[in-house]
Amino acid sequence: MPRFQSLGPFFFRFRGQLPFVFVAVLLPLAYGFQMEFFPREFSILMKASSTCLISIGLILRVIVVGFKAPHTSGRNRHEQVAQTLNTTGPYSITQHPLYLGSFLIWIGVSIPMNNLIFFLGTILFSMVFFTMLIRVESNFLSEKFGVLYAEWSKRTPVFYVNPFCFIPAKNSFDGIRVLATEYPTWISIVAGLLFTNLLRYFFTQSNDYLLSSIYCWISIGVALGIVGRFFKYVVVLRWLKRSI
Picture (cartoon, rainbow, N blue to C red):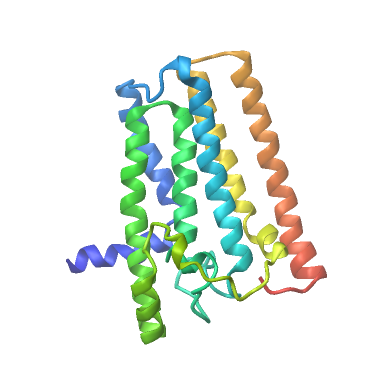
């Protein structure tokens, strides 16, 4: 049990790299057993399902980041940071709305692979991955906020949504923070969709449509990276001198 518990900080610190390790391990298995998730005649349904899940996850993350209290739920790697406990807005209907949004995005990005093994593997990995992160975060918040955290955690679902518990956010929506901090998420989505198109192009369907999609996703990803970093490091941090 102690060894299992010690995995939590490891997952937290390397949460940006571990999904790539998972993909590298799962891909040979997925392509060794070619099992389609959607029949090809249902390609429109496949694309619609993927777009819907990605959009919901993306919107949820934007809402969370926009309304959360400053210096909480950050992208810090080495340790947890929380000056206050978020209990209103999205955090009043689920304890981990950012993780829930990321989970929906991951599932949405995995669907265009149209591989049942890869889809089920993504769900399994996500369950283990987010369980580890939630344990680390819960222990940290419990130690720091004590009774306040205990009361909030009792009435708020851990990973599903209960809209009947909704309490309006205390803070106003901060669009600048969203644009300055969430662009890596958008780049990750583009990278995931680019990756699935590359795999489909080289292993299953080599056609001009997929090739044009690949070029399109590359262009979008590069543009997001350049504009996002310029906005964060030049506009926000240097010109506006804002702490995000």
